[in-house]
Length: 66
Length: 460
Image (cartoon, rainbow over the protein chains, first blue to last red):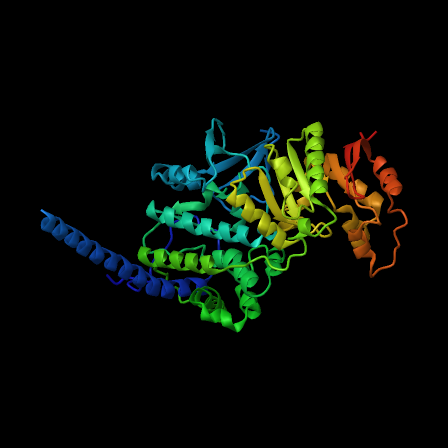
């Protein structure tokens, strides 16, 4: 689940870039995105685990009631 | 097509530009933007954003342009008044920042991204912030960084942090730096404790250091990669940082004005009634209330469904005004921070990119309630100059004269020599009658103040 942030440094935007994004800003963004993306991945992963357990518990509760 | 006038602010983006023709605003979409525009519509992003009032609506104009560079022309919904971030209160800028980030999240979900994050692309329309630049979107390519990250930090995060951590008046730095507050300046002004907040440490302090570092080093030639998940993390981090910045109006000069004036309850009710009557007599479609404080009398106009600019120099009063406007979902009010003794000038390229406040605030009716004594006595503006100024902005005027005997004027005169011999009721009426015809005048019961309804004289 670790995001592939540093897999390549060869991306070129095909859009109509008219702003100077600033090379320092881009470099920082890459580092931050690696860190924060990991956080998002963990959050998503944790959310899925919770959903599985919530489903399981609600299913078992139902079967107990039955 | 002869009278087609390109707006002076619309020249940076090769995707298209805004122009005025026959009194209507149009946006030309250039052929180079075709794929991006089509994606905006086909992905459902346009519908999604316009339905939730996040993006200005437009209709495709049936115009045939012989120029092969033109893809199509759109006619966006008209904004009542264009305003700039240096005229907004803290929470207006904060709401505009959050809107920009929310739009970027929606855009990513639809396979698009914002290619710019300019605060000037956000306007207040029907009491809500809205993105007005339909051409701000481009097709998102997996792995590409957010090109507008630096611009977002300069236009929104830096001024908000400075307002929250140092002084709200530092928001006016946006007037000097047209492309946002430089990050090295922002971190030089921010207190050391600001590094304790992760979002400010990274997006401002580290960001400024990286900018400085990259300026010294030569480019390696390598291109950046930022995953979509990383981009979402970045946007979420910016969002939580912006949300955590607060500024509470405290110690405002005029925030408690209506509790601290010479008005009793009866006089206040009467003043409101007179203003209402005067407004009904003039029947304006657009009002500008200068020195509006928290907008109590602006609401007399906006409550009658009249678009009303509600300007005051005090950021605290304007923030209170804005908070009330959002709470009550008032669609016809526009609170702004304007110092009348130094209103926003024309700025930017050729001083023509951002129009002056006085050019934009032209209205049918001007309200100047409890304002004249501040301008004449505190700022030494000659009465005749003030009357001329009022006549230059609107054809109708509701103005309040506060005589020297009033305790508020006495307070202003306490520490200064009375060098205002013409500041009398007679002097006031004589001066204003040179520019206006007096339609009505009413003394407010229980005070010495007089309200006038004036109609501008025709210039012969």
